[in-house]
Image (cartoon, rainbow, N blue to C red; front, side):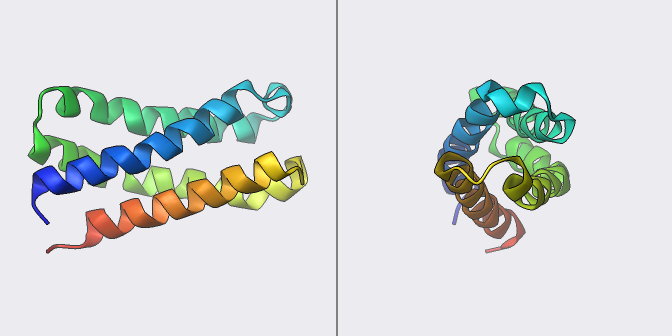
Length: 115
């Protein structure tokens, strides 16, 4: 997969991460839960770091930034996966967790696959 292909695929996956982030940011539960706010802020920070390289079509810089911040993205995913059942068992939260887990899994595969 070329760098341009990786960036295109990552950007598509990040659209799912963005929707999870938007849901978490605007849910009532976020008003009372610092950890939930940390998750949505980390998701935002990850995507913000990739915005300039994406706009400039600088695939090498985009991928370098994405790899550099991957551990934080994974940590946010793991935290949300852990706290989600405590926050709410509503289907919206379950689906947000499932979406984030799968998106981050695929992002990690792309960024750690050297082919």
